[in-house]
Each structure stands twice: as structure tokens, then as C-alpha cells.
Amino acid sequence: MKDEVTLRQFRYFIAAATTGQFSAAAVAEHVSQSAITNAVRSLERQLKTPLFQRLPHGVALTPQGQVFFHHARHVMDAVNDAMNHASLQPQTVRGVIRVAATYTVLGYY
Image (cartoon, rainbow, N blue to C red; front, side, top):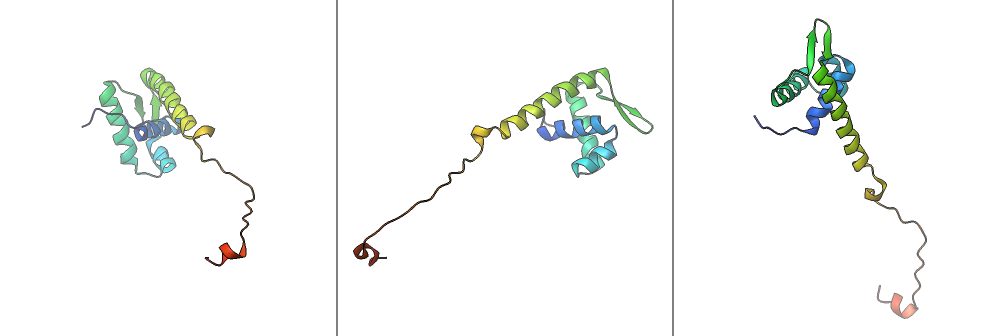
């Protein structure tokens, strides 16, 4: 297993933390519940700490999970800001261009 963390893992973790259920997070992210479970387990394995307390009807963040949630949310907000920064968006130029030509030049086209 890779030791890299992906933005997808962050997204799935945040969805699980926000909804309080892996199944609801899966619906929100349009993936299977096992995708959410695997992403969270991978994060927990890499961090060597549980991020969620598994409950009979959902999950709750552990104290370590709350700290990680804060940082994960900050990372995702920064990524969204970077992707939506105005100077990185295509600039639209508007206006009218008028082209004039003589009959001699127009004869070649």
C-alpha cells in the first residue's frame, strides 16, 4: 500500500465526518460504502491512530479525528480556493472587430 495521501481520501473522510455515517458519505460522494471505508482505514493506518469511533448506528470522530478533520477541511478549502482563483480562470475578451479590405484584396478570398 502506498504511503501517499490523496485528496479523494480527504474528501471521503470529510464526508464521513460530516454525515456521521459511512453509508451516507458514500451516497453524498456517489461511491460505494466500501470506498469510504477503505479510504478511512488507509488514513488510519498511515496515521497509526483511529479517526472514528464506530457506533451501532454510525461513526463519531475521536479526539485525533477532530484534529485531523480541522486540517483536512483546511487543505480542501485551500485546494478549492486555488482552483477557483480569478487570475487562474480563462479571461474572456469582448468587443467588436471590424475588418476592411479593398475589392482587389477580396478577390483573392
